[in-house]
Image (cartoon, rainbow, N blue to C red; front, side, top):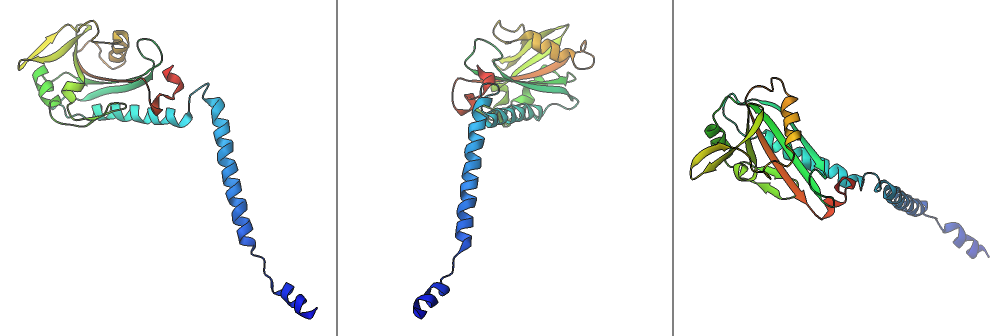
Length: 206
């Protein structure tokens, strides 16, 4: 009997293992609860982290356009970006970014500046290093937009094509939101679109 009693007294219980197990169960339960709570929010905003990621990517897209090197004196007046179903039907995500600059340089100087390699962070297409090919350059003059292109080595300023501007009213309001809308301005415009992928899990896409 004495030997049995000694054996029982010598046994030590490791409480730390039980505490660790309880902590793991608590963490797992918390994660599961957050996932369950996030499901109803998809009916309003989509998956919250996807929406946040899309907003960050959209902001960085506009910021990369804003940071493009421009001729001296062409100060950025204002810039903005939008995300959602911006044109056409539903079931897709649209992104557009626009930067308004003073028009102290010539169209040729602007084209030359935009032809320099520089990273543009498109939300869905990825990174591009050819700004002039991927973006659109407009000249705002006399209350209307003129598209600035390069054809056969010559800079041409002409009327935009019908499909050239997705929403001309939005661009006009953007120009008029800056001081002195009656003056000439350059507007750099970029757009992107997707029909699927993880970033499509955003309520604003449908």
